[in-house]
Length: 308
Length: 330
Image 1 (cartoon, rainbow over the protein chains, first blue to last red):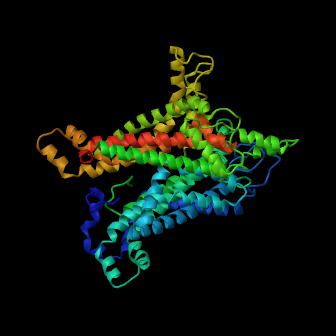
Image 2: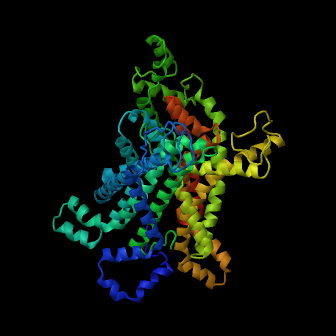
């Protein structure tokens, strides 16, 4: 975590030349400015936006739907009619990939929202009130260390087979929040002793209000970064589970099911594997780069990651 | 220090017990072994199905508590029960265990050493080309799912074989299985053959471990590089290289020790994909098959195996912690 003793990167020494100009800006503007200055992060953001638009607009552009068969073109390589080629059954690979990306994006974004919210609320309550909740949280995190979420979701998969993918998102999020919650708990423990929290408490503000009004806003940077990183790790978790058939169920497709179905064809019919895999890596990489840029912008003292 | 380690060990053993019980109870309630017999035509009589399920302690008509009690009693005698086919889980595990362990051990040991070295080197050369290359590598590797990585390396291996003219039976690097069948596993030919099989799958795990460790080690090392004690060490005349390793790296390794335990569970999950892509019959494949076949005892057996693995790794990381940080030893 951000530690005051951490080495300040040389690059960030530059804005110090005009301290007055920076001081006049609000924190939000300042962060946004710093973010804009990271060229790589901007490329990442543009890529994510582009992929998002492509995933949702392409059904309007493409002639083929993801569940439509072209019985005149089995296993055809990429062509003008089928941009990414077709599968053994005549499904259009472009439509499948875009459909899969829609699902991956929704799973990532929704799951990250749920898991970061859970982490923030549970972590802050555990830190502020301590007691049973705090102990339970620490034990849960340790338990997760021994029994990875992947294994538990796999065991539970037969029981959500017939249900909507929302159950799957909830499960993914349910195994994602615990480690962040532990960090939030630690930060709450130190924030709790600060003067402004003491002042609020002595004025008679109830603990619940203090948490939402004073404690959580003070760790907004951590939560924003965590949410971004969660998007990419949830997308990767979905791919892993769907690869074995433990995640998104047919006839629905996701990038994970596509990669699982066509991993064996990577050598013989490369377009079946490399298009979904390439889009997946591009998406996750772009999100990670955005997360890294956000971290630098929100917390200039953390010397993490690559710089542009 | 002995008390510290004993307390940690006790805690870890407790965690293993709880997590394995949770896994067994989840598997016993959520999986449906009866489905194995439901699809048959003509359907077998119910009494026959009950008897078959009773024989392997998976009958859903028996209360979960009774099944769990029976399973725990077996466990205390070192017996993990029977698979859904009626074979002992112990035999299955002891046959498959080393297949996975070979991958995970090579992956974690080589990966950790390389990752720590790469991360520390990148931190020392901060913002130089080497640092950028290492950072980009770990960024891309952490954004690639293990499945995709495994397929890419497998195809690269096949391409390499074809490019170098190894198109016959003998290959430079093998991409399926852990040994060519029919060889004596302990002869010289057998050992080299196994080495040629193990390179690519363990490379997948090494890449993950290097990316994971390199990133954290770089941050930990950067924290240390700016510290006063490192400057003092150099001021008193210690050469820079020695100061960096003895005072810098050693301190930077302390927070990393906690990650060792983490990495093991992570690599086991990674090994599941690697085994599937490279056709190894290890514990990961066993787990996936067991879930698909609703094989409750096998699922519980594999989770126990993973938990014990993490326990050992966790204990080793506590030992490393105690060795590196003198404050713990007091």
